[in-house]
Length: 121
Image (cartoon, rainbow, N blue to C red; front, side, top):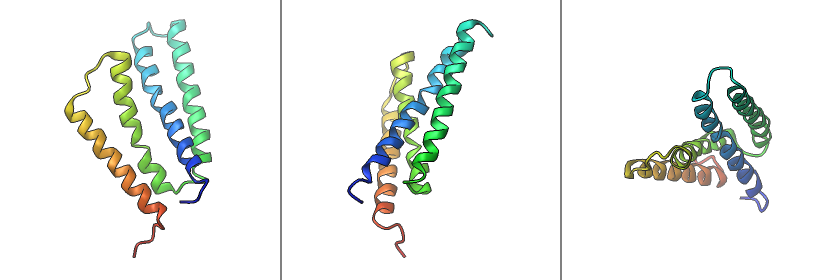
């Protein structure tokens, strides 16, 4: 990896963190009365998050290979699991932790294999 190649990965995971939060807003909005002010405000915030994510994602793709960026997007599953526990009191089971570990290992393997050259033929 190049010396300053860490920043695009950090930015990428920050936008995945933001992106994963849209599910929280969607679930909270779904509990509101349809078309109430709170419902509309939550969905407006959700759309704003998705818009910021879309723009930031395009910027990340300038610096990170598509295969690596797409594989790293699986980290949003881990964030979703965390948000479900924090905001909705859902249980994080051993199976969920095992799944998160598998996702993390897969991301690391692909990211480091791509960083090392990517063309292992």
